[in-house]
Image (cartoon, rainbow, N blue to C red; front, side, top):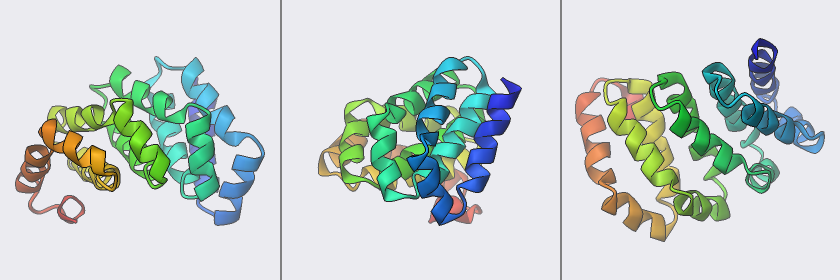
Length: 177
Protein backbone atom coordinates (compact mmCIF):
# COMPACT_ATOMS: atom_id res chain seq x y z
CA UNK A 1 0.00 0.00 0.00
CA UNK A 2 3.00 2.30 0.47
CA UNK A 3 3.60 2.51 -3.27
CA UNK A 4 -0.06 3.30 -3.86
CA UNK A 5 -0.12 6.01 -1.18
CA UNK A 6 3.03 7.59 -2.62
CA UNK A 7 1.66 7.22 -6.15
CA UNK A 8 -1.52 9.10 -5.22
CA UNK A 9 0.65 11.78 -3.64
CA UNK A 10 2.71 12.01 -6.82
CA UNK A 11 -0.42 12.34 -8.96
CA UNK A 12 -1.58 15.18 -6.70
CA UNK A 13 1.78 16.92 -6.95
CA UNK A 14 2.05 16.60 -10.75
CA UNK A 15 -1.61 17.67 -11.16
CA UNK A 16 -0.68 21.09 -9.78
CA UNK A 17 0.15 22.00 -13.40
CA UNK A 18 -2.95 22.61 -15.55
CA UNK A 19 -1.73 20.72 -18.63
CA UNK A 20 -0.81 17.75 -16.46
CA UNK A 21 -4.34 17.56 -14.99
CA UNK A 22 -5.76 17.15 -18.47
CA UNK A 23 -3.09 14.65 -19.47
CA UNK A 24 -3.61 12.52 -16.33
CA UNK A 25 -7.34 12.46 -17.08
CA UNK A 26 -6.75 11.57 -20.73
CA UNK A 27 -4.27 8.81 -19.82
CA UNK A 28 -6.71 7.04 -17.50
CA UNK A 29 -5.15 8.33 -14.30
CA UNK A 30 -8.50 8.99 -12.66
CA UNK A 31 -9.43 5.33 -13.00
CA UNK A 32 -6.04 4.31 -11.60
CA UNK A 33 -6.43 6.55 -8.52
CA UNK A 34 -10.01 5.43 -7.88
CA UNK A 35 -9.09 1.78 -8.47
CA UNK A 36 -6.28 2.12 -5.94
CA UNK A 37 -8.70 3.61 -3.42
CA UNK A 38 -11.13 0.73 -3.97
CA UNK A 39 -8.41 -1.93 -3.69
CA UNK A 40 -6.87 -0.42 -0.53
CA UNK A 41 -10.10 0.74 1.11
CA UNK A 42 -8.86 -0.23 4.59
CA UNK A 43 -5.64 1.81 4.32
CA UNK A 44 -6.21 5.34 5.64
CA UNK A 45 -3.06 6.74 4.01
CA UNK A 46 -4.12 5.57 0.56
CA UNK A 47 -7.57 7.06 1.14
CA UNK A 48 -6.20 10.40 2.29
CA UNK A 49 -3.75 10.77 -0.59
CA UNK A 50 -6.30 9.38 -3.04
CA UNK A 51 -8.75 12.10 -1.97
CA UNK A 52 -5.98 14.67 -2.31
CA UNK A 53 -5.30 13.42 -5.86
CA UNK A 54 -9.02 13.80 -6.64
CA UNK A 55 -8.82 17.42 -5.42
CA UNK A 56 -5.96 18.15 -7.79
CA UNK A 57 -7.48 16.37 -10.75
CA UNK A 58 -10.91 17.96 -10.28
CA UNK A 59 -9.45 21.39 -10.97
CA UNK A 60 -9.88 20.43 -14.64
CA UNK A 61 -13.56 20.63 -15.69
CA UNK A 62 -13.52 17.52 -17.88
CA UNK A 63 -12.00 15.55 -15.01
CA UNK A 64 -14.92 16.51 -12.76
CA UNK A 65 -17.21 14.59 -15.12
CA UNK A 66 -14.77 11.68 -15.43
CA UNK A 67 -14.44 11.40 -11.65
CA UNK A 68 -18.20 11.14 -11.31
CA UNK A 69 -18.59 8.76 -14.24
CA UNK A 70 -15.87 6.49 -12.79
CA UNK A 71 -17.67 6.30 -9.43
CA UNK A 72 -15.38 8.77 -7.70
CA UNK A 73 -18.12 10.40 -5.64
CA UNK A 74 -19.02 7.04 -4.11
CA UNK A 75 -15.35 6.17 -3.55
CA UNK A 76 -14.64 9.44 -1.72
CA UNK A 77 -17.78 9.20 0.43
CA UNK A 78 -16.99 5.57 1.29
CA UNK A 79 -13.45 6.54 2.31
CA UNK A 80 -14.89 9.18 4.61
CA UNK A 81 -17.42 6.74 6.09
CA UNK A 82 -14.86 3.99 6.60
CA UNK A 83 -12.19 6.24 8.14
CA UNK A 84 -14.46 8.52 10.16
CA UNK A 85 -11.89 8.82 12.98
CA UNK A 86 -8.99 9.81 10.71
CA UNK A 87 -8.85 13.61 10.46
CA UNK A 88 -6.53 13.51 7.42
CA UNK A 89 -8.98 11.41 5.41
CA UNK A 90 -11.83 13.69 6.51
CA UNK A 91 -10.05 16.91 5.59
CA UNK A 92 -8.98 15.54 2.20
CA UNK A 93 -12.40 13.98 1.65
CA UNK A 94 -14.16 17.29 2.29
CA UNK A 95 -11.72 18.90 -0.14
CA UNK A 96 -12.54 16.27 -2.75
CA UNK A 97 -16.29 16.77 -2.26
CA UNK A 98 -15.81 20.51 -2.71
CA UNK A 99 -13.68 20.06 -5.83
CA UNK A 100 -16.01 17.59 -7.52
CA UNK A 101 -19.04 19.72 -6.57
CA UNK A 102 -17.72 22.45 -8.85
CA UNK A 103 -19.68 20.64 -11.59
CA UNK A 104 -23.44 21.27 -11.39
CA UNK A 105 -24.53 17.67 -12.02
CA UNK A 106 -22.11 16.42 -9.39
CA UNK A 107 -23.64 18.69 -6.73
CA UNK A 108 -27.00 16.99 -7.11
CA UNK A 109 -25.40 13.54 -7.19
CA UNK A 110 -23.39 14.19 -4.02
CA UNK A 111 -26.59 15.31 -2.29
CA UNK A 112 -28.45 12.22 -3.52
CA UNK A 113 -25.60 9.92 -2.39
CA UNK A 114 -25.75 11.19 1.19
CA UNK A 115 -22.71 13.40 0.87
CA UNK A 116 -24.23 16.26 2.82
CA UNK A 117 -24.74 14.04 5.85
CA UNK A 118 -21.21 12.69 5.51
CA UNK A 119 -19.67 16.18 5.41
CA UNK A 120 -21.77 17.50 8.30
CA UNK A 121 -21.11 14.35 10.32
CA UNK A 122 -17.40 14.82 9.79
CA UNK A 123 -17.61 18.41 10.93
CA UNK A 124 -19.45 17.33 14.08
CA UNK A 125 -16.99 14.52 14.84
CA UNK A 126 -13.87 16.63 14.22
CA UNK A 127 -15.17 19.90 15.66
CA UNK A 128 -11.76 20.75 17.18
CA UNK A 129 -9.82 20.22 13.92
CA UNK A 130 -9.56 23.53 12.05
CA UNK A 131 -8.56 21.89 8.76
CA UNK A 132 -11.60 19.61 8.75
CA UNK A 133 -13.80 22.59 9.61
CA UNK A 134 -12.32 24.73 6.83
CA UNK A 135 -12.70 22.12 4.13
CA UNK A 136 -16.06 21.04 5.51
CA UNK A 137 -17.31 24.62 5.20
CA UNK A 138 -15.88 24.81 1.69
CA UNK A 139 -17.72 21.60 0.78
CA UNK A 140 -20.97 23.06 2.14
CA UNK A 141 -20.44 26.18 0.00
CA UNK A 142 -19.99 24.05 -3.12
CA UNK A 143 -22.95 21.81 -2.37
CA UNK A 144 -25.22 24.74 -1.51
CA UNK A 145 -25.03 25.99 -5.09
CA UNK A 146 -27.73 23.38 -5.79
CA UNK A 147 -31.15 24.52 -4.48
CA UNK A 148 -32.26 21.08 -3.27
CA UNK A 149 -29.00 20.74 -1.34
CA UNK A 150 -29.69 24.03 0.43
CA UNK A 151 -32.80 22.46 1.95
CA UNK A 152 -30.94 19.24 2.83
CA UNK A 153 -28.13 21.21 4.47
CA UNK A 154 -30.62 23.10 6.62
CA UNK A 155 -32.65 19.98 7.43
CA UNK A 156 -29.47 18.11 8.45
CA UNK A 157 -28.46 20.88 10.88
CA UNK A 158 -25.84 22.35 8.57
CA UNK A 159 -26.50 25.95 9.52
CA UNK A 160 -25.75 25.16 13.15
CA UNK A 161 -22.69 23.11 12.26
CA UNK A 162 -21.19 25.91 10.16
CA UNK A 163 -21.93 28.57 12.77
CA UNK A 164 -20.37 26.39 15.48
CA UNK A 165 -17.26 25.93 13.33
CA UNK A 166 -17.00 29.69 12.95
CA UNK A 167 -17.41 30.25 16.69
CA UNK A 168 -14.95 27.54 17.69
CA UNK A 169 -12.29 28.58 15.17
CA UNK A 170 -12.73 32.36 15.27
CA UNK A 171 -8.98 32.90 14.85
CA UNK A 172 -8.68 30.62 11.79
CA UNK A 173 -9.12 32.70 8.63
CA UNK A 174 -9.75 29.64 6.46
CA UNK A 175 -12.81 28.68 8.49
CA UNK A 176 -14.10 32.25 8.51
CA UNK A 177 -13.95 32.63 4.72
